[in-house]
Amino acid sequence: MAVTFNGSALTITFAPGAGGLQTIDAQIDLYQEWKDWLLADPTRRGFPFAFRSTGGDLVSPGLKSGSYFFIRNDFGWRLKFPESDEEVTLTGSLAPEDPALPVVVGATGAFKSALFGLQPITQNVDLLLNDIQFVRQIIAGRAVVSLDDLTVTIYETDLVTVLQTFSISADGRVRLPT
Image (tube, rainbow, N blue to C red; front, side):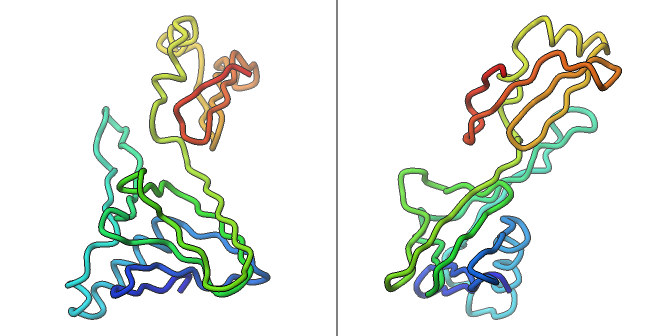
């Protein structure tokens, strides 16, 4: 298990990673592990929920919204580092329920900890595609949109010729032509 849950303290503690490095998937290592932990002992159901999820909703024919996992920091839940020097990379769409409240507590003791986050693009694509020239080419079937973690590239239908590339800020709100 990549994490341990403490319902009394409302903490989700990362297990020490090999060589102090590890990658945690928001859906598998946090959300699914929490559901398994919750269901394993009926007394745990008395603790506030640690997560809320959304996603999978049909937004257009054949296209579903991306999944998001919200840590219930409004209920007091926090991510906690282990008692070791640790670098943790979180992947997937994890967000705080209340962005104004803390999400992470440090390890007890003098340890070096770093938390990095990588989120796939699941929102604000409309902001990236508001240049009418490229939108018209896409609608006319003369361009293909390719999404990766932090860029959107619009190709000609030959899939070689790049029409435009946009870089995206980590919060997904800003698009900049590159």
